[in-house]
Image 1 (spheres, helix red, strand yellow):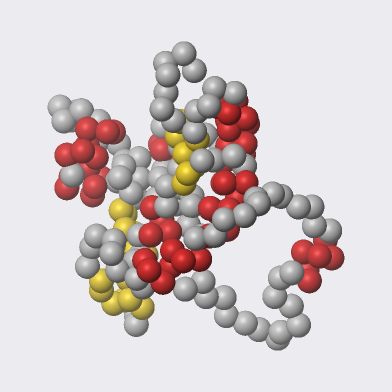
Image 2 (cartoon, rainbow, N blue to C red; image 1 turned 45 degrees about the horizontal axis):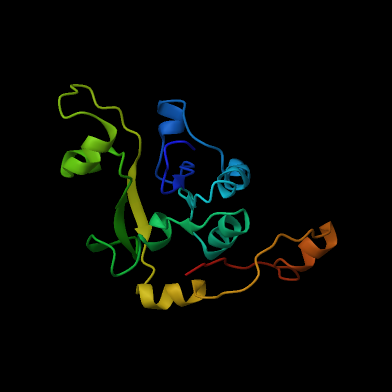
Amino acid sequence: MSGNAPGLDNDAPGGVIIYARTLFWGVPRALTGRLADFAKRYDVPIIADGGISTAGHVVKALSLGASSVMMGALLAGTTEAPGEYFFSNGVRLKKYRGMGSLDAMSANPSSQMRYFSETDRVKVAQGVSGNIVDRGSIHQLLWHLMESGELRFERRSPCAQIEGSVHGLHSYEKRLF
């Protein structure tokens, strides 16, 4: 911490990141709490980056000590996110590409500079491109995250976990948005 860092990015691989496999590198999410404990001693904020795709992930990251979260996957399907909508099999989708994907590196010089030099002849993908389901406007989504209060983990018995999940139905459809 002698470099006077304004903040630390825990950089856990998210849903469109593959560098843990291609480069054998990445920080497990479980280390967020330990990293936050260490950084707190030096008054350095932690950014939870990677794998934040639900409100529950935001709460978990903040509970483990993160000061802020990057929400690429959570916001990617919103109306305000870049890209055009299209339909596939009746589902409204939007293209979502990881910054380390070959698609992003080909289209965006800043992505290429982050992952490689422009002079590198061989590019190794560190992310993928795919499609994400339409989530509507960011205004309908973010109000779920606008809450202040106490964050903590609680121990739940196996019975409480069963009672707290869907039960008593023959079948059901799980839709987050």
